[in-house]
Length: 299
Image 1: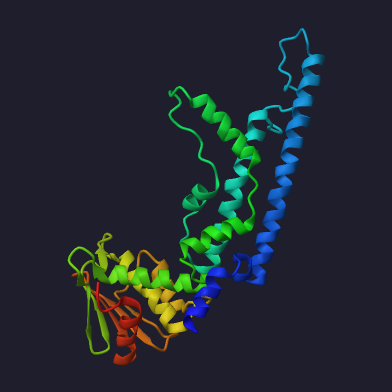
Image 2: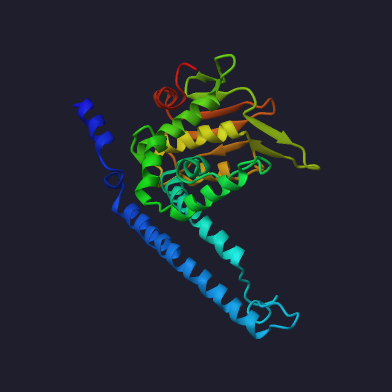
């Protein structure tokens, strides 16, 4: 049965693997992208015709044919600008869709990598003998390119190794938690468990003197682990307890002790000047379950 589920995940079209809301977003941007691909060349032709007429009317003068069309303080149009916008449509389309899925599902999909898989690369090394030929080939390829949102979804699901988007979000979160809890070079854990308390060793926090007051700050690894604890507490990504999100988002904590009054599985966090952080769970069972599920027992 499990093998059949995996086979279905591979063979299912990417369009069928997203929600109706996601699909509506993709289709709206597909329509806008397609429309811009049609209308921008029309604008280019219209702009070139306007300049031609102005050049004829201003013949015999030193005035630029764009003088009355695009003055310095009003509209700014140019043939190069329109062409550049036309070529940028592909990356805008990819970037907007990938950003949407990153934000919606708490993913870290690489826009650059997905663009590189779908969009021709502009030639470099202009001093080679075939540079002009490569530019012509690139220009033609960019003009002929017409992306579909399903092309982008294909790349996204390749990145997730076939996982559903919600599964990928949890996979990435647990990977970050595991990476934050282990020293990769030595293979040793950067944490210990003492009854209900998870003790984060190494540089888990810092204290900075600020005149006479000073402030605390959590290390990025500690914040990653707290994001895992937030998911462990709520079971999802749609809601994060305020007490956790507040200390994650604050860079100058004034107290070394914080309680999680809106949580059930986690009670408090304590920072020390030797850079240790203690996170107290409500029960030892909860602490051990979090370690097993999110931090792992091996590097």
